[in-house]
Every structure is written in C-alpha cells, then in structure tokens.
Length: 89
Image (cartoon, rainbow, N blue to C red; front, side):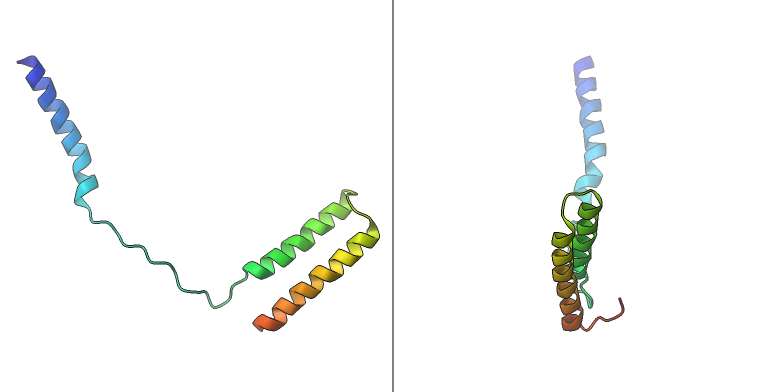
C-alpha cells in the first residue's frame, strides 16, 4: 500500500513538472533577413590591422614587414568601403 502511494506521488510530481514542457507550442524560428549594412568584412579588415599593430609592438615582425602588411590591409579596407558605399569611417 505504501509503495503504491509513493509511486502515485512520484508519477504525479513528474507529470506536474513535465506538463508545461509538452503543453506549450513550439515557436517557429526564422532567420533574420540580410542586414542593410553588413560590417563583418570591415570588422575583419580592422581586426587584422589591430593584430598587425600588436605584432609590431611585441616585436614579432620587422618594421618593413609591418609597413607592407599595413598597406595591403588598408587598401583592402578602403576597397571594401568603396564597394559598399560606406564612407563614414
């Protein structure tokens, strides 16, 4: 008799806890549309420039290598700005 009561209490507890999980409807998720201004490419150019400056400050690269890489990255960033029409920066 006591085991039946314990099993009834356990089943009721599990049912009370699990009921809200199965009662709610699943919400559909839609991917957001493309953003008007996608700055991920600009962020990657600027992040690379920042890393380059850190490497120079830590002595990981020579001044001539730094200048060459900096010019390359700056040109890439400016070309991206020209293509995207974003000239605020």
